[in-house]
Length: 635
Image 1: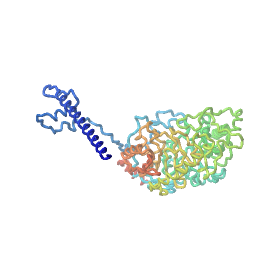
Image 2: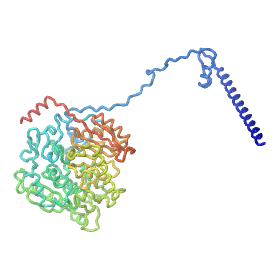
Image 3: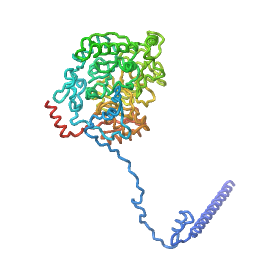
């Protein structure tokens, strides 16, 4: 009974299936008949079909017509019919004129003549407008050679790299530089130190302590060929040397060729490009700066960048005028009056004159301004600056006012915080971070950043064997330094790093970098740097092109990098992979050899690392240049 019941149910199920299939077949048949009837409603017009239905219906009608239709397999569209697509512009950066091998865009002499000569304003930075920027690669001079390695480079430079003999004639009796065969020799002399820079520094060291690490950063105004800074390096004192591009041809270029930190710069109407409280010591050796003029404006600027308790060292006129006035071709009354004015300006800044011995005089800045504010009743001028950012120093006009030091509660306290001596200063948390003056940067951030850059630099050395080779690179540039971690990780190598804090950066951290015992400057990378071509052996940049993405042309930044990079010098850039792909395309058009490597954490990071090398090439020598070179070598 159960079996019979199952059979009955199965038969009924099969009947349902048959009925459903029959209904579906009928529906599809009716749809097909309807499509045929619609297809036959085509209207003939001049032998062509004017479709009143969809294209699919018309195609169906044609394919089912009873008459035979010849199928046309010929191509009705050719490549010529396609719309013209513009090809992507391939960058082209030809070599600049061979005469531009020392081109410094923002210190161009022809442009400078358009500006006021009062207070040397014409010697300040005056950069080309956007339409004037050269789109070519600045060549090296004919015969350019890789510079001598440090420490040999302190004493020698190739003549072909800096083909100027003016200083060898003008400063012949002062032992600045001598020309010997195919090279220059730097005996270490100076106008005020005929016995050499080492002996001169020893004399300073007898007046203040240069050996205990309390003096680490120095600035040399009107540096000449920077022998003072060159010889301080052996005493663990790093000096920012600067001088204008003037009649003393190529003095800053000589300094850089020697492997000594230097920039083109001048004390004129705008602040020096350094933060407040940056340097432990400032120096002028016959630098010809009129310190007592312009209401003491230049000494006021030195005071801004000098650290609390820092020293100002002056040698040359008018110091020791009693013994030198005849040689200086000035009257005793004139020199005595100049010294009295300098002494008065220094007192108005609350500086204390420590010592004067022979040709050297030294003043010291107070460690805080408690007493200085009280004596404004005596010194009516200069007043303290009001509502002014003391670290703002990019095209910031100098003002005849005294930059106030951070407040302290005790007269024995050092304004801004006491720094440790070198080398502990490098890794200790800088006072600017400890005080909380830099929002969102904590002591923990600083410690983590220092460790991060140790790992990153180790990775860089694995990518670039030349960076790992001690002595291969001497002059390094970090285009976006933040807290100076890149430079700190390289401090034990025989090199120095120019740390750049872009003016567009979220945080002004250059003061932190100086508090670590490192040096640097401000820069807007939409403009050229105040330095000569072929300044740096190695350039590093962290997220620089992302920062400047909508500010200026990527190719202009890369051409500036090419200008200041030495032939066979290297570059390491870290940025988003899409940014680096575009950078690589432009860099290869500049004849750099490039490759993109993975992040130190592995291939899954969007941030990548571009490693590039500038190829060796020089300008072609003209007959006139060859003849001049031959004459020089014979003389």
